[in-house]
Length: 128
Image (tube, rainbow, N blue to C red; front, side, top):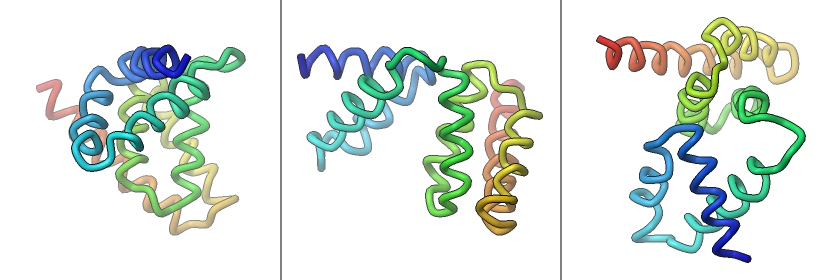
């Protein structure tokens, strides 16, 4: 069962961003391989892999939550890229972050816009 959850998590990660699974393994696999397996199996295999919401909607919710936290800029950038990969538009991402100003405050929203600016610039540079 655990191997199935992990494999499902890898499938979901590859749908979100083909490089994401490899990045997780590179960043955690040598120092904290159990944490990498937990993130993949639980976070992406069990939670992201659930029915009821599509990956697009899950990424919108994740971007909102990470923006509201205000302390997870690296993860926010990862999920902004994933959101773009699953069909969330740039305009929708900006609106999600603006919405968070009401609930998390202007500093969190301004930090979210900064992360968006960086992700959009990277995407534009990669597109050439």
